[in-house]
Length: 623
Image (cartoon, rainbow, N blue to C red):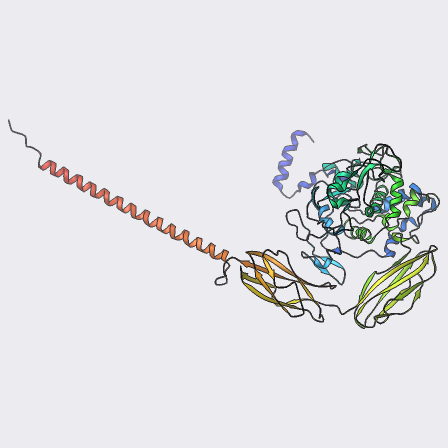
């Protein structure tokens, strides 16, 4: 098309109106390569995947030759599995990663699902419904979270929407695989892929993240001069920077606290499985979003930064220490749950080294080229004996089922009950994958202990069982209370089938004071207004997934004729404006009348003087 024709054509399209300008829009860099940024779900599935679902996820490996399931061939063949259907997020341009931390890094003990305020917890299906995420300016749900480098042995105070700085309990977005090592591309060219992959982008203690910088992970030689990241504040104790104890040298490395070592190792293993170029071809170009990453057992690239290419991979290490950390800090429940939350709600892919931590040795360790991955029978989460459910509640006179799994099982799986007056079992020994029926005998709590010989070693598991009638709801006498400052109101709560304690808590204790924080069924609580404002009272029952809330509004002045003080003030101001306007109008009219009268009087006076002067003027003499 002639350039001179472009302007008239565009003008014609604008006039026509029926032609969409999106037809002329060039797709973004990210969209052109499939990195469409996903939206966050408002219905969140909190259930972990079953053993069968996990094994099925990797089932494409089953048809491959054994040589294709070990060493770098295993990495090559894992990539299309964990890349398939992956959802992407931006690190640079929005708050979605921060919002995701509310769920994936949540401390589910200190902030249980039932404590969610902006959303509803469906206890039957273990899901959050109509969940509302917070922002920096509107925190909404603001749960406690597990942050890397914070000592989990002390009372963790990190909040998802707390301090995002390098002080106190502040948290950062920590790239476990430093983005400078292979995908250091910011702005519009990095709207998806490795830079914003939450599998390795964890909430991390701010100062320790600062100390980590982009140094390789490795064991620190504590006999040499080193720095302790914890000298800045106690939350970072155990995180060290110094020199490698494995290979020496003068390159600075970072060693996290012991409880994070396995988590970090497995996140780094994932990055190489998801972002590598061992196939020699890829549907997406190798760039900052889809880098070419490898693991190193030297520090030669510790300080090298940039973006990888198909012929120039970038590395991270130290491999030998990471393999060690994978063993000394096994997969735990928090890491398992995080992996499943990401898979079911956010990324649609999994970390194979959380599901099968033994696979790291098949790729880089002593088992390389000796053993091969077998999703059908390999140990899930590195556990020899696993159960379908770790805790269960049964209604009185009801029953439930549980199943135990074990690979390479010798003999049977043995089941035993600590308190046989609470429950009974349909059988006391089973094969792997065989279901057992648990029958409720009376209300109470007990534990089922399981044992078996797996891979030649004794392995154990347990199931916590509680027999108790389920509480359906908490009913409050008033769902909304309006009182003035200094006044009091009484409310009560009850729950059918419950005779224990109901817990009461106030969102803002500076607005409302409660006479007590717990009550028995039907007992009244006194609410006292401390200052003008609005807050909510939350009611819960221990060990029950039920909640209720009361909205409380405290006014500075009494309510009159059903109107709040705010409306009364507005009406008063309006009336005052009308009165003042009328007075101004009245006096302005009156002033005009006076001026007219004055003018007439002055004219009459002038006329009178003129007549007087004329009458008294001296007469001229005739000649």
